[in-house]
Image 1 (cartoon, rainbow, N blue to C red):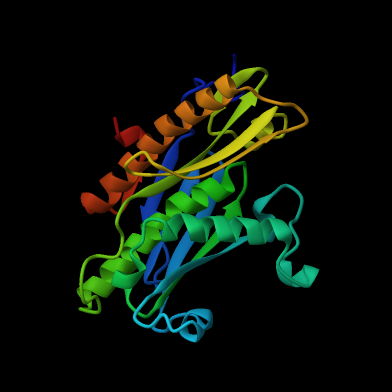
Image 2 (tube, rainbow, N blue to C red):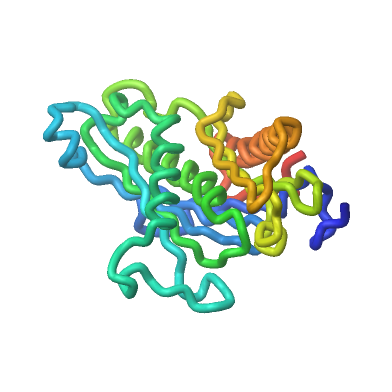
Length: 254
């Protein structure tokens, strides 16, 4: 199969992650995946959410997310949620996915009685925005937790237990492919978003046949491709965070 950008079926788009992009956030990352760009920031609130306080969950923290697409992120202007009278269903679903994905790798007891807000703003959208948001938000979360540790605000273990990343896969023209840009996503027979931790364990799989069914063999092929892509994304995160870099590109990582 010949892809629109000449990539192999198991090849990610060029990925770059820049750490510390936003000056005033406790943690931040600008992630680019092809022509998709998402700014992820982490803010720390020294209070647990109200629902946790009402449940008596003292000493336990929370990680939550908000997601939005800027008006100029797409060829046709995207109306802000405020202009539509509230957060839309798609936005709510993506926000919840990001929050679940990051909580899955966070020890909320070790975090302490505080909330980390992860704001993911899509600056430019060309497919895979929710997956890029998860991958970038993890970097912002790690940086925020590092700032807590440096300030002596953590009483025990570091709250983040594992790495996490996400990628899209799909069936286009009968072929399973990795990391779909919009032009492929818009005509895919099957569209799937996969979230995994650094140990290769699944956190969430969202798969849909777009007017068609798909076989177990196709699903296995898609999950295998996703695993390959997520391993590469986690390698980028590790190079950025463990090697204390300010930015990292996929072309720099073998």
